[in-house]
Image (tube, rainbow, N blue to C red; front, side):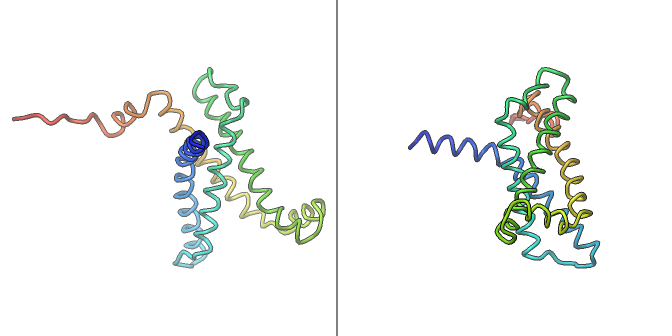
Length: 171
């Protein structure tokens, strides 16, 4: 039982950074969208949708990180590795978003093919692609920083961004 808890804790901690990052991003996205629509408040519904979106991206990143395919460009230049990971993450998120939309329609229309046909007709494509474009942009930012931190180490990265910690010195 203890080993199971350790595995769950490890997976939770691995999922936390992308989930928190995209939690913030999705809430910003929904806030901006509400500003464009002249709605100057954030509804509970949009907050829930943003949170679910962040959880989907976090889980997709966690699953994608387990794929050996993800390590294909690990020994190459950092840019190739980052772009490869972004591509894989984007595909995984796309698959998760697709199933998030199609599963409720299967019960509504009775079959996968019928649900898929209605999905194609019912999806608000401009909204879908806007979110997908934002996801790719922010996946590039997230993966770039995550890989840079892996490369230089957490402490060195903190020094690079915030400067060296000054030790308490007596004057």
